Image (cartoon, one colour):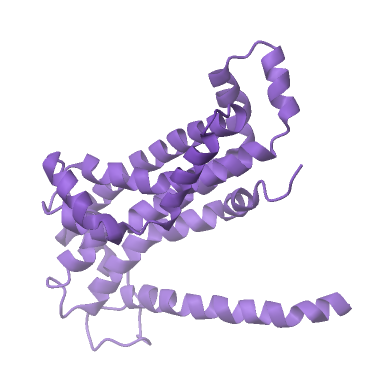
Length: 271
């Protein structure tokens, strides 16, 4: 009983924080459901889904969704594969200088994309990757590797070494042990890396704005800029665009919440 009373202020504070976070989200969704006729208000007399269909039919939003899906899916897959292989090698097959290599990679956690945007833009331009999916997939993957390496390293370190020893005794090659032993045991981490990388890639704005000037190659985050003029006097349409853009991220967090928590805390307790 005492412990429950002691936790009450914390729970109340968390509830207030959750409500404060949900209020802007509710305003956006309510605005998207606002009827097109009449003055805009947060207390409309009726709600409608027509704004969503109008936006999808009158804009290039479906194409922007496809572009973002391609870039996000490929960068996420690359981060999972490359960072897990690197982490597995560093944990199970250390070499002279492996700690230094790991440190150098993890320094990428402190790297702000805006700090390297000028040389990065120059490099992308020289490689002829402007208005090319690879121009975003490459930087997104590189920026996501440090986080992936850190989480997979923690996950593989938490796996008892006896499991890997048993696989080696059975004659399992290194890559087979990685694919059939390490990765299945690191499923929560895979889900965590996937959701973090997917959300980061989906929400990224600056590089997409600079590297994708072709309307057919722009990502969904640029919809806010592209359609502001078109719907300058139709706030309900602007809210509909916002809702559609953030909907995949919200769904991803809701669906993967349990895996996300397990993946972030994996390896936090020494075995």
